[in-house]
Length: 122
Image 1 (cartoon, rainbow, N blue to C red):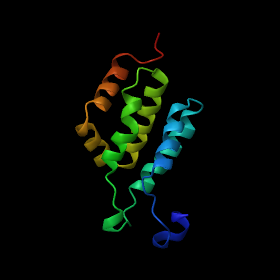
Image 2 (cartoon, rainbow, N blue to C red; image 1 turned 60 degrees about the vertical axis):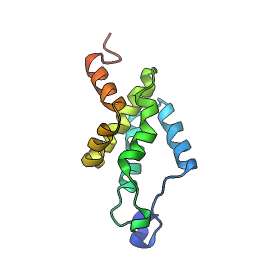
Image 3 (spheres, rainbow, N blue to C red; image 1 turned 180 degrees about the vertical axis):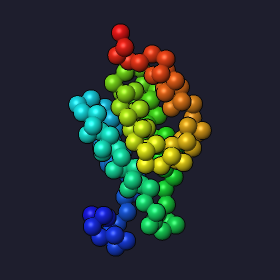
């Protein structure tokens, strides 16, 4: 709706129902492509530059809040989905993705672990 209406449409704001929806999407392992597209759309909507000062959100902190449980998980599928969502954030906003890496060591550790031991390399 925001895309169609431009500045007249409401901006996407973080909410408990949205977080639950994202958590459900990140817990499923059906299609990496669908997950990447959905997460990219979410990051783009959060990064909307036409927001008023009162509606601005910290994307790096949101990314940490949304992705850290998955990036720090022992479940390989959850980690893969977290990394896919992190890649979507990186594609949408390099600055916010880099800042998210500075906020916590969990994303960086997950990336390094995936490079050292790819999950399905055996």
